[in-house]
Image (tube, rainbow, N blue to C red; front, top):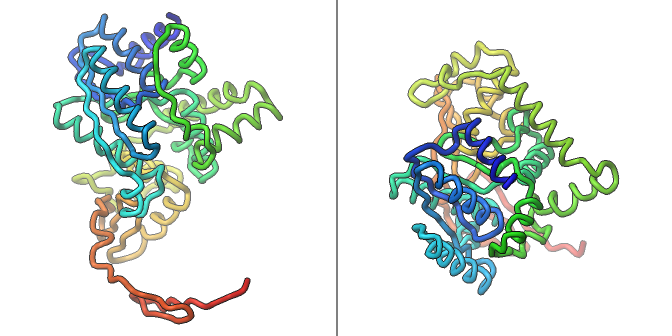
Length: 347
């Protein structure tokens, strides 16, 4: 009950879930999403709101992925909840859009969540990120060169997204489910360090705990909370710099560099775009240059400088008009403005 009381307090403090909410819940069938749904069902005994589960079969693990889908559908039926499930081949999606499996999976999930969000006239999307996810995100962004805002970890509430269990460690989640005989699925790829975040969770953090400080997670989370306090104290209102959803370059040019970077960070985060110092520096470079300019932000979005404004637009046409070329080895071809040459080598 102590875990649930913590979620109650968090909900009262942050107003994550309110009366008459209609909430889409990302449901993988794993311990985090099962625990989240169990806690929401408890909260529903006190607050009147609706729960809609959304599951994606990523088609990565054959029968295991199909088993996750069956479990999710059966779980929803048992709990009397509406469940939407869809099979999405993220391997093909990744190749088509030039994304890693991690990126393709994330894009597929968020696209489906938002599709069901609109279809079901929901007003919130609940995600099952836990405290360990926050720490891993901090380390991931630190390694990639994020600023202070990026080092906040995963915030509990941003736009339509809420994360009610973001202050609970994974071990406590699993212990609760096991102690109460609540079934869940295990994704074995979570125990493979092929992906960057998995490696941080499986290798880096345990190494630091064993070698330097067994309380490393607690210390790191305390730092994240301190960074959040600093960011709140230096808070800026993004709307002050927007004109019809675009950033006003004239207004940006009046800011000192630190506040400028905060505005750019918030603007990119408003589109749920992963931020690095390199991206921010690239945007800064074009601010004082004339004319128009596009910068690729990720597989889905580009940032466009159009004289007096910066805007983020979808990059859906990035592969259209690309002519296929055949390169013989050894040999060379002209591709756009470039000459590509291939040679044979014994090295």
